[in-house]
Structure formats: structure tokens, C-alpha cells
Length: 57
Image (cartoon, rainbow, N blue to C red):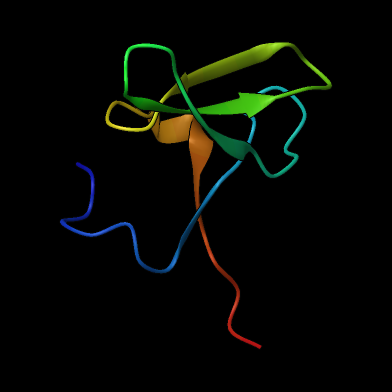
């Protein structure tokens, strides 16, 4: 189950674990993308493997 808010979560690549970059898509939506792996997902439908709790500093 996804949390009700994205606060405190990082979007990471399920393949390599790098932090994903947020981009605007041509259709007006947003998506997270990993340049190293060439894979991504729409911001509104992340796979659970792409969400990691942010470490408190």
C-alpha cells in the first residue's frame, strides 16, 4: 500500500538504485526516469520497488 503522501520518500530506480529525475511528458503528465538504465515510470503510478524512505539527516 502506498502512503497518502510522497513526503519522506525517494523515487529510485528498481534496477540500479539511483535516484530518479522528474520530467514533464509531452501529454502534460510527469514521469521519473533513470538515464543509466533507460527506464522509468509515470509519477502517479510508481512501482513499490521505486519508493524508498528518505534517510533523516
